[in-house]
Image (cartoon, rainbow, N blue to C red; front, top):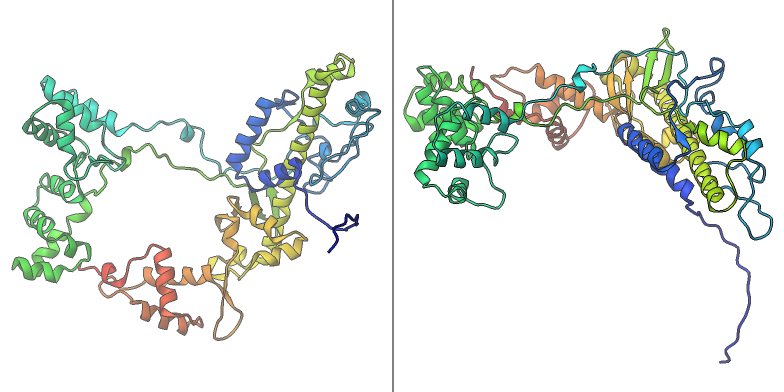
Amino acid sequence: MAMELKQSLKLSQQLVMTPQLQQAIKLLQLSRMELLEQVREEMDQNPLLEQPEEAPFGDTADKEPGEASMEAANTEMPAGVEARTPDAAPEFKADGDGPPEIDWEAYLNSYQFNEPTTASNKGNVATEDMPSFEANLVEKEDLADHLQEQLGTLRLNEAERRVGMLILGNLDHDGYLKLEDVEGDPLIRLANEADVPMSVAERTLRRIQNLDPKGCAARDLQECLLIQVSALKDKSAALLGLIIKRHMKYLESKNLPAIAKDLKVPLEDVVEASKLLPKLDPKPGRNFSGDDAQYITPDVFVYKMGEDEYTVVLNDDGLSKLRISGMYRSALKSGGVGPGQTKEFIQEKLRSAQWLIRSIHQRQRTIYKVTESIVKFQKDFLDQGIAHLKPLILRDVAEDIGMHESTVSRVTTNKYVHTPQGIFELKYFFNSSIARVSGEDTASEAVKHHIKQLVSQEDPRNPYSDQKIVELLKAQGTEIARRTVAKYREVLGILPSSKRKRYF
């Protein structure tokens, strides 16, 4: 068979992920805090970007949401630059082989530098749901520092102080003495490191365990609880200590009759001793952990403005209002930027700033459109609560706003909305459908809400089993399997009926 060379034409389509498109997709899926960090990084790297002290909103009152806030996104590019959408890179026309020439004066005159990057709020509704300024400034006291301060008041010799500081330096967030690479008693390792006898280490450990909060520096849960029980002044404390020593498993499963039978004491005495358990803290160091509460700042607000009307308002507070630097603007207008590498650098940074501004604007517009569509589908939830949440999938919203499902998925991840029913992640409104005996299907979140309500209303002495919950839901018109109830119960953090049972 002869070998030969041929030329052929082939027509094909492919999606080219330009750097600008990648940036737009990346900004779309960022959370609010991540977006703020990204903007700060861009401002550090791009000298043409600046954040004005007071960015005027201009004449935005009569414009639609998403259109008033970014004249920069729709502004004309300089002469020789073709205006394109954010999902495509701009093409430049150049004379010869040199860098593209841009009519800077025309561009700077047409560019609305003072416009903010974020979409304006329709209705200009003020919000007061942000955490207080003081809440962001308060610094919690560290557990080791708290104990070290008390340790300084004790009369310790040099050896005790040395091993004591090692103990405090190896406490975890819950207040337990643990070493990651040590199996068994971690105090043996610390005693060797401090070069002190084990008896000195044990004596110092006991003194630390009785500091405030009691139970810190315990090596396991049983030791932690016993330390706290020994400080209780109650006639049942001795029996509770015996129960903790011998029957932790029965105590965890609340099998009080088995404990009474094994210890050969009346069940009433075991019940009285168990009543002391709420006074004990299994994690004595958690109030001093460095994990501060994380406040959620909603990306968008939904307000009820009339009997059947809701308004979607983007949260612009805290987002940078980006514009081109006034210093570079003046330099470009006056021709102070000469040819060569300097001019190429300015061109590159100007294009980068333009794409960033457009991408942020597109992100805000997309969040607005997705939230507006969710409001349309979930009006019953907004009016009446979680029990009336409807089944919804990404495709429903994607078809409603004319976008791809992947775009809707990115927008709803780590984005939060403030509604009359509370603050929810946008993904919360997308639920699978569960068939009902009669009427429309219900959302899985609504079923979880019903299960939570049933458990909250049950008799603590005779809690509902999973099968009983199935029967009660069926009586309400919702028919699901027992294993589904068990799965939803675990998701809600509800214990099985055997562990929910109370004797007092």
